[in-house]
Figure 1 (cartoon, rainbow, N blue to C red):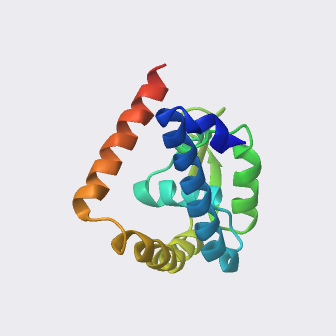
Figure 2: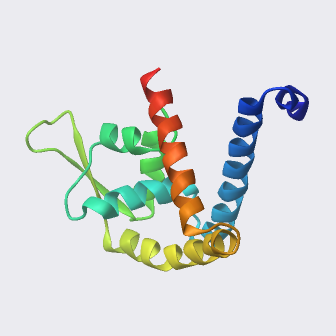
Length: 151
């Protein structure tokens, strides 16, 4: 059915292919993360915290940084905290805000999971697209992303 919708509209064909590719990538990444017992969204939260470590992020900062912001962020953080991958402390400057940081155990998960993710995905990309094509895809997707954010 979705292919019928896309048949006469090249832009719809593009969207269907973006969605299909995103789903395939999600499944590949999820398979790599299974031994670490975390989801790709939890992994993205850990990556965001790792990027600014030893600084902290608020719940709002984390939600805004997710590819798909969700009202479920508190539950995701609960699970990460329960496994000692993050810590949550009340912000000293604003007691209504929580400061979230990654723990050494969380950093260890990133360190051990990332090579597997890169190895799996690199195998698909390096063998199928050139560096110029990669840069073009990144540029086009950024423009689409920015357009969607402003509309």
